[in-house]
Image 1 (cartoon, rainbow, N blue to C red):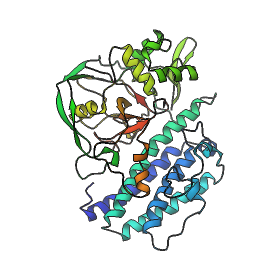
Image 2: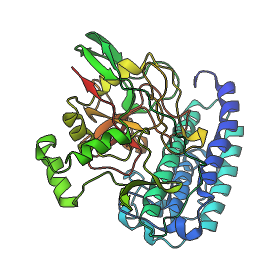
Image 3: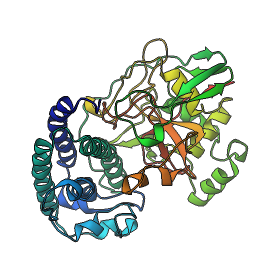
Image 4: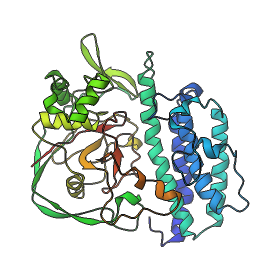
Length: 418
């Protein structure tokens, strides 16, 4: 989106803003008020909090700055729904978000409605204000991140309920087979990675820079449930030789023996999904694995995880299309057809790259500077998007990141080797 064309940008934003905001509410619509309030673990947030926090972003970081005679919807919300912006002020403790039985879901939806009206008025009267437009675009991309988080957080919550509730039916499972795994060879190269152009990108995607790559091979598709099951049944969770030391300690401390949503029912493997408990689909990509699990599987398979530079260098030649949120399936699908597949959509792909700043990275000033830069430690990069990512949200240069033990996201595995 080119910020040098303010009239076009204003018209685009006035259409895009309500569309993105409406999608968030539609994702929360199947939930009861009780569903929307509960927090299943400290890393997750209640759906009601996601609805409020994304609204807080626009009220606090946009309206408070640009709106004449600004007045908050509720002054208490500034603390309640601040996530981690220390420059803005205090935050309600993240692990306690599920205790916020008040405000009610109805009041949070009223908050969204009022802020949306004010935002539309602001966009209409501040045509050509490039600084405003940049903040709004950032806010919409921020909301798209929370759309995926809302789904992954409710999936984790529902998985803990013995009633095994269904978020949304997804129809009959497709029984199609999976394309055989092939290896695609790439020669040594000096690759250019990082965001290029005038369209939106997060600050952690820049500056664009050169990276020296040795020759490598990349798997044609994601690792499947069936392939990962062979690792499980081969005692993969019982052999320390496959695991990083910290991963082995984590494994023992958590007493894990399989991916988070897998379980045995009547001696058959099943998987909890947003459509409830289903038979494990062997040809679909394995998801909800941690970095530790992805790395251990790769070692067991005689391969490794790709670096983010290898991934981006390869993905730059692929069409930016795949199984995203917009398709409505909300689960990864089996790969089919020749060539490189599933580079985008289906599952976020763990890389072997620590999440760190690119050479020349400069953190923006003010609260916006807290968005990405301060998290560049003790995390690993994931690439490509998932079946819960909005289609227009990802780019070839997009860098997602999570701690090594994170499993509740739609994270999967693509193999590489030298």
